[in-house]
Length: 115
Image 1 (cartoon, rainbow, N blue to C red):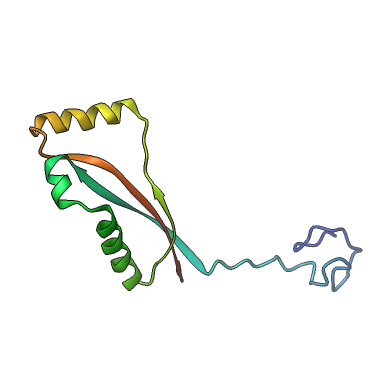
Image 2 (image 1 turned 135 degrees about the horizontal axis):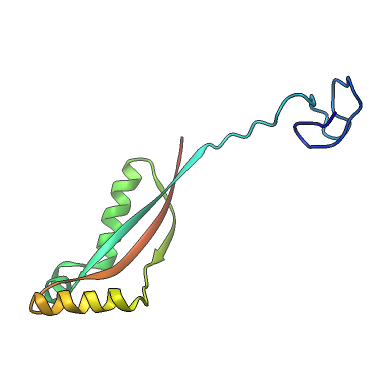
């Protein structure tokens, strides 16, 4: 008979595993007491973005709102993309809006919260 908890072989009819001390018939129970979430903070570019979007304040506002819901920020990752299609699309949007607005890479927030 193999232990369901640690996988070691035991004799037939044993009550406790010789390796881990648990009942060989009980499976190990693993509980996860945290949940994770990823949030994106987007920024604006162009003339409007230069006057309206501030990266620091955008991050602070988003983090304050998420902290009020019980989320804790574990990591902030700058979103950089070397994708040629995305860069071309950004340039096209900027030209079509007469240099007033385009989307910019922002930040990814990795969050965690107790269940």
